[in-house]
Length: 163
Image (cartoon, rainbow, N blue to C red; front, side, top):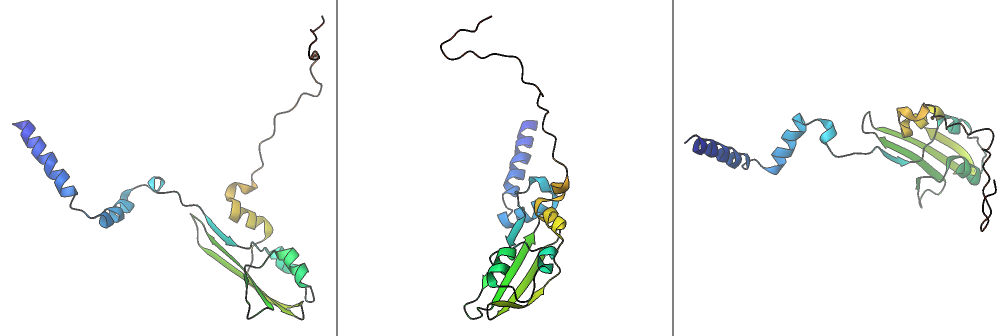
């Protein structure tokens, strides 16, 4: 008799749990499930990484080739505005806030005329943004190699070692 009651209760619970829709089940799990059980979501980096030091090197009168060498190929160029290059950067990290930065370079007669820039990170901070906080840690030391090679003679092929 107790087995019947237990089976009836178990069957009722299973039947009632099947009434929940998949969309509401997913949203309710997100509320109580730990984050390590969720899917892996990598940091999203898109665009050109431009640092404060790179922007400080821009000079009026530089050629397009010099600007491209220093900053890289622009992310956005327009057929309607051939004298305008846009360097955009977007970072959506797993932890932390989304970052959007933009640098607009304007040319006149194939020479740098002017530019507008958002606040760019310094070079050492850009490394941390891309590689994470562990980027600045020193790498482990490689094991030391012996200073003198061991006294081992290797016989030539087809010869026996001599003692």
